[in-house]
Image (cartoon, rainbow, N blue to C red):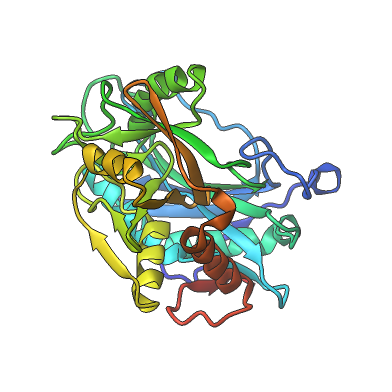
Length: 355
């Protein structure tokens, strides 16, 4: 299926746009008028269509319901200063979704379908993409198994879908996080690098426990020794120590974040020293105690750059430097925002213009 193939479009007769608050949208609560669907049947992707957003019908024996046979991606659409609709690095999301599919024994969605689906959906629902400060249109592509079969095996049939919704900031304030030393998010040989639903379901209980203790998020550590920093609940995590940007290397247990890669690329381009290496909990705590940890922040599509103000470990809360004085993380955020809005040159070819 080529990128210019025709998509069947059925428009809604009851748009919600006029009654939706696009200035102060709540993340993940409201969805735009249409969604894209494409089915995998008899060994091929077929029937790509855009239809009004609404519930879908599945069998009670659906494989996804019983065995979490599901993968997803997350990205955002914006208006730049020229009022064009732009998306940040969507081709990289398409490539990563194929990797997740392979790990979960699913057929990979062709990049042409992924990109055509996003493009046509944004063209149809262009009114949902505004230039209000701090807002964007969140794009959620996902794929689920569709076989009505409770035996344990890969499904034969799948559905790929894309839904969208207006969002504001995922985190409205700097974060208080806790280093997790009991529960495990991912292990070597597991599915930690894939964006699959089971990873996030398993993280809910420890995250909820941390929230009851007053924390916003967790910092996950390795599943074997809990001595090494891996990533945060919804983000990769980065540190600035002695003017050096440090983050854990990607692998089986760490998601290859697109925002992560973007910030590493920008930092290197600016001549900053960058280290992708194992980071121990002891190193981070020691650097705080010695006053060498200048900044800590999460990076991801939903949050972009989320400053961390407090790190909790073994019952002690370590307060970090004033967020407003952080030149590095705020600088990265500023660069990304200006690149997306068209204020500065997109020297890396990251911006895709949908309309």
